[in-house]
Image (cartoon, rainbow, N blue to C red; front, side):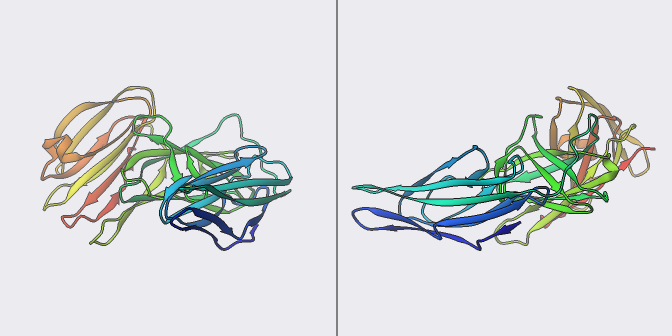
Length: 349
């Protein structure tokens, strides 16, 4: 893959009467080889004194995008190219920037020339696929998530990442270089890896979880993790890792610590049908503090402070047991200063 571009600068120049739109360069040339890593993207700096919008024209539709598509004032956007479904050949895409002035409407069109070359053959998805799960992700409101996906095979394969909301429906995330999407397929070479980053641009935070499926092999043929980061002005960023998990036939045990001002947050995903997940909370001596069922919808993701949800665990050190084969879990340990780290569960023997 080669991208004949370091940066597209778009200047929207205004005068009291009207504004003008130009791009530099006016043409973007991109070459992508089938089977190599995707996505292909370029940063776009837009400077405007007025509202601007964009329009995209391609044949076929869907391989060219820009995010955000509208703006006002200085804006950093991304021109994204997702050529995975295209045949070998050449394609032309047009991105038209428009800024209406007080007297006339001004526009300028950026031309994108895409060449798709024949590359690595990818084995079609198998009839039965084994799924891996990531129990937590977050984007917006100061949060971003970075997904690392690794092909452990000595042969190329496609690994598909799908994003799911707290309610179990598809979750649209703004992925850098791609734009808003509910999932991405990575065509990875033998022993290759891929990286997906959310933009974190939304004002409010969206949380959820993810699934991963491989075109060949099983969950021992690939691995993945999600690193989610919190940024807040005036303090150091904090981040934690949510590793890819495989459901345990007997459930998981998660240690927690709510003593000395520390607090444990729990992320649970019900990967099965709507129902209840059995919950057992024990103290450090193994004595049961709480034994009850947690109702959850199909594909639901629940995030809560353990002490707030179950006051029996307040101020205690112990374990949380999820006795179900259809649930995956992750813990977050927050210290009194606000930073946090991940607590990994153990599969029940």
